[in-house]
Image (cartoon, rainbow, N blue to C red; front, side):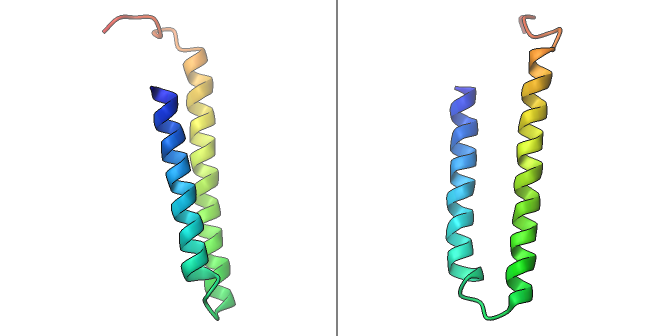
Length: 69
């Protein structure tokens, strides 16, 4: 169930980003706007991927992984 949520989150984010890039950025006449919006979204994507990788690595070595709540 956890992996499904992550998959849906990333899939939805990618589809909304693709639609936004197509609608707003590619139809814009400003090169500065296009580059700056692309840089912001690329930065968010990098941070999201790094957080997911870090969370996965920490869950492997979590000493309290098998403790019941």
